[in-house]
Amino acid sequence: MWRNWTSGSNSNASDGALTSILFVCTGNICRSPLAEGIMREKLEQSGIHAVVDSCGFESFHAGDAPDPRAQTVARKHGIDISGHRARLFRVSDFDNFEQICVMDASHYQKVMRHARSEHDRARVDYTLNALHPGRNEEVMDPWYHDMKAFEEVFALLDKACEAMVSRLFRNHSRP
Ligand code: 4NP
Image (tube, rainbow, N blue to C red):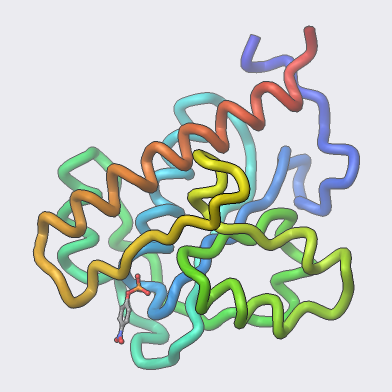
């Protein structure tokens, strides 16, 4: 069943990938690398080939590994995000990713400001809209908080990624 995929009709993902997803946050060391790691894990477990990446909007941590607290919570759930290195959002991300998933309103506004067309704008959405479409709920920034906040963020992102993978399955599996 999981092997019966049709290729995405408007996919610009390379190498026969089903889709391409970019998660965006502020520093690219907490929320978006967690989302990237969770999504990679779920796609791998499902046998789905998709391109996944993450980035941020502030350069403070560009080139850095994920925050140790993010690495710890990911590792606790069997996911290794230690190899990720923070990078900034770039306009070419609109050409390379079908779905651009932001964590909060500030990222949404910044990504939209870089959009060159309606086509670009249509790719952008809040990550948590995978759970509650149209509500534009935000994933809070755990950077100033404790491990409990990182656990809460992980749980939210896990649910959202699960919903995204289920939607991929519904939209692309043959009857
Ligand atoms: P993130 O969290 O956007 O989830 O990676 C943050 C990490 C660092 C900072 C802000 C948010 N900072 O201001 O350095």
